[in-house]
Every structure is written in C-alpha cells, then in structure tokens.
Image 1 (cartoon, rainbow, N blue to C red):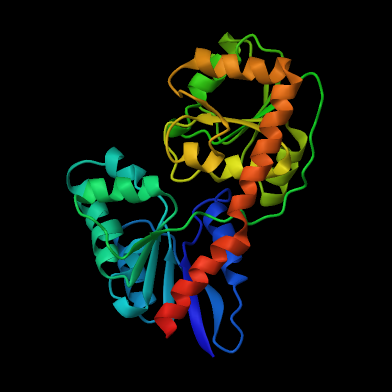
Image 2: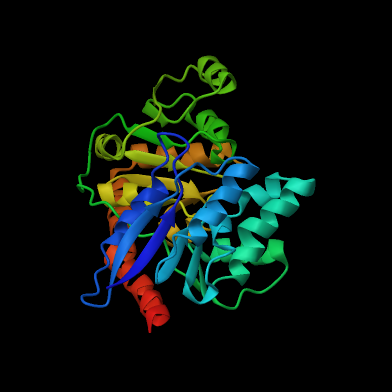
Length: 329
C-alpha cells in the first residue's frame, strides 16, 4: 500500500502542541486500499547549522509516496522529489524580526526553496499566503489556502457566574499581554495566564493590583480543562499565523475577544468581538460589556459555537485527501 508521510518537528519544549495535533488529525484520513498516512517525527530538533543539514539529508532518505512537511521545518524538503512533495506554511513572523544574513538564509531555506520544490504549497490562512508573497516579492501559483482543523472535541458548556473568569494563552511579545493586562485593571475578574511571565509583566500586575494564576508547560488535557473552567478568552495579539485558541474557546462555550486584524478577524467570524490590539481602553470597554450584559455574552457564545463548526477536521481533511490523491494518481 502506498504511504503518505507527514513530517513534523521534534519538539524543543514541552508546551508545543499545535503542529502535533494538526498531524494527528491528518493521520485520521483513510483511503481504503489506496494509501495510508504515517507521521514521521524529525530525529533531532531544528537548531544550528549541523542539525539542519542532517535533517535535510535524513528526510531525503526517508521519503514516501507523498511527502507532506507540516510547518516550522519546511527547509527539509529542498532535496525531496518535487512531484511528491507538499509544504504547509503556518506563518512568516520571523522574517520581519530577523535582519541581514540571518534574514536572507531564513527567507531562502524556509520559504523560497521549499516553495519552488513542491508540487503543492498550502497556507493556513489567506493572511499567511499574502505575507509570504509580499516578503518573497513573487506570486505563488501552486498554492491553496487550507485552514487548521479543529482537531479535539470540546465539551460545550456555558457558565453564567457573575464574576467572570478570563483566560489568556501565550506570553510571547506578539501576544500583546501588556495591553491586555492594562485593560483588566480595576475589573472584578479572575485571571489565568498560560505561558512564562517576565519580570516586567509581574511588576505590571503588582502595580495594577491584578491577581492571576499562572501555568507553564501544560498538556492538551489541561488546556481543555481551562477552557471548560473559564468564561472569556482574551486573545488580542498583534500577530498570529492562525489563532487556533479562538476556535477552541468558541467550541467550548467561551466568549471571545480578539484582534481586529487578519487572520483573527476571519478565523473568529464576522460577528465576533474584534478590538484594536493597540488600544487597552477599547479592550476594557468590551470586557465590561460582556460582564454586565448577559444577552450580549450569550449571543457571542452561540455565534462562536456556530463559527467553530466551519473548521471541523472532517472538512479540512477532505481537502488534503484530494491533494494526496492527485499526487498518487
């Protein structure tokens, strides 16, 4: 039987889960008597020149009938058989953060060469496709936008407690934690933050008298537990490749406040609560409205649940199954 091989990174820390969940969803694709799907995990982490050269050679000798490279490690495809290769791109945030030679190498080996050596290139959002084309200054013709599937099943439960519990996931700079905390000053809420917190953020919370629970390196099951226990997801990032926690929260029965920028605007749905990530007062205004207006709170939850159904893994997997079948045929 022919084999579709999905190549994923070796995790560099214990709280990376998104790509792994994505891969497990694709593994569920079943095309009887035509092909089977196998996940191939890189033997070493993608760090340093030597390990990356090794991964390029290793992937060349571990090719299948279809080779699907799932984000972060797109460079491993540069020696693979072009006619059998699919690259999926998650984002290109680091292109704008790097400079000089480092930026040149990243642009060429993570984007330009893999894109040129693929039968098909998929992008998790129109925003990601647009940003990569803009940075490479070229149109990518063999491309298709296929969203990230909502892999896990979440228990839908609406909490009607008076004192709302707010959840923030992610603490890297682009997650915009500082502005969200400023917005929470003076509000009577319980706050949970997932991710490592800097001394600057701890000082800010102390100054603003914001009490919070903090969890680091949590499991998928614990994240599900947090979605079940909290009422509002605050995800007002300045940059995202996709924004999966938005859909997971909507699927769980949480209200969601996110950024009025792409791709969150598309992912969250056109009737969601969208705010300017650079304006803490606007964020605060919408949190207050969710807390004080029960009808508004419930309407946001119900619309969010309906929106999350558009990202069912069955619908997304059908699109990848078509690509796999095209290559195999």
